[in-house]
Length: 446
Image (cartoon, rainbow, N blue to C red):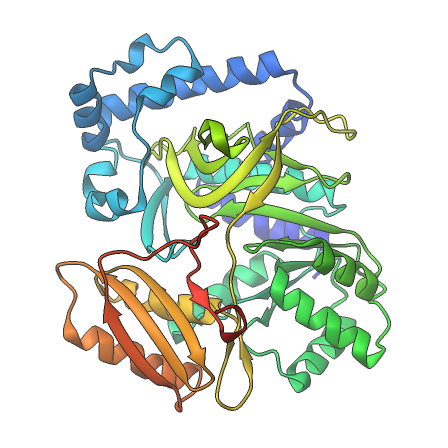
């Protein structure tokens, strides 16, 4: 599809009908990225105070919390006062979802369910204005990678498991002018088909999991296939992008690679500019790093979404670790920098037929069970042998015995029927010594 058609006949009309005035914010955000630090701080304080007052007045969870600790949002004078509030965790959201939703009514809201990097599936309600701002910040950052709204995208991503979701995402992909290439099928035959299809598609950019793009790049180099003439850039997301993977992608496809960091609950958190510096989307978010004096500035990421009034997330633990930077960037943008992001360490699962499977396939299975009301609070999958999977589950009070049977059946159906699967119920999932919480532990890293 031509980018002009995609932009003006599909993307803008569909999002506008959902109450999202993206163009309005995109022009503002392009200017905001060059604001000085004092302007950014004043902007964030203004909208933080509005959010906290709204939460205090309309959200039962925050009304009770503020009363309990003696916090009055109307008296907020500084962003630093945010630290008086306890961090919001995923278990709290799961247990108190109804209490966390605002009593205010909105023209349009979106319900986002995400497994995230911690294995705890959460559902977040987001109002249209917050979605529009989220998309505007993302589109601005894509321009840093030389990508314009409506440009054709090749998306190396998961494929929904249910027929209903497959149809839904086909429609979304069409509106977004993108074609999805399954992260769940990375056999040599499949990757050769992908390459032939890409020659016809002529994508301007790749977007997807770093690990899948790495596999595809290795295949392209091994086969001696030439780079795609249409490809302008690659944007990786959801996983750690190492220097080695970046170099491999650039060698295979002869274009620059840009990293994106975000999560389903709040959207884009930081994006990489042309100088490979990660800029925080400070127009939409306040990012804090919870660290102690011995950690050299590295700590757990806390995010406050400034515009999600339907279900405010204030000082939300996203489950990853990072280090902030005081550097200035050569690109001239003044948005704050993250120097390093830790976490999201995923391993491939290798089935008894020696095929590799992206860990997102397992996450899709768990998310599907959650949509069917399975009371799974957290999970971890460990592969100790090529034919054996050990699954550890933190279950809720409403966990039913048949969920275990459904889980085993889905893994056998979608991955391989020869796996010996054991399920163990635990009180919590242990982090690695590094502090990372690895959901999927393949044989190569045990």
